[in-house]
Image (cartoon, rainbow over all chains, first blue to last red; front, side):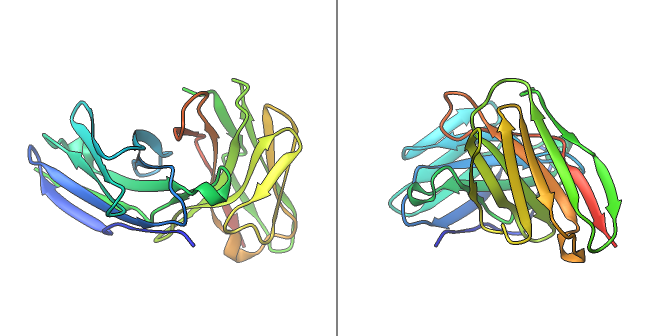
Length: 111
Length: 113
């Protein structure tokens, strides 16, 4: 089966850097995605890693290690508006076009 | 903006009644998904579609059915609603030419009494 694990909550200070980890278990693997969701809103796509390494998009970066079945989302220069839930997601080669999401990490940014 | 709308946005219904949620997209995307979101569970896939009249089950499909008679509409039906189906339902589409980007609709909050 497929499973993803990520911390339930992370707290950080405005201006700091925070890393949200995600470990996954799948019988096949296409890539790891990250989504952000503010309270009351819909998830929005942040990044996607199909290959090992770091992908950078502005203040956000995402890393993947396929050999370790591990990835992380790195948020730099934290702002209050970054307070949200962050989900990692994978698509399994055996699952057609099904995407499985982690339970989410709630990020609290403090002043 | 991927042009995804959901209707209704909010609904209160009683146990045992049928409920249909609609997802509409305007950009001719092939793949469409229905998820439910509950506290502590993240997003769980109910059903998805990979074309007109082509659908498949997700991880929590029991009690739900779907239909896609035209590209732009993907309907989710709760044949006989139960209180355990109280949730927020999101529709999503997979971006064209993109391996994994999914764009989500605004969601439907369903309360089953």
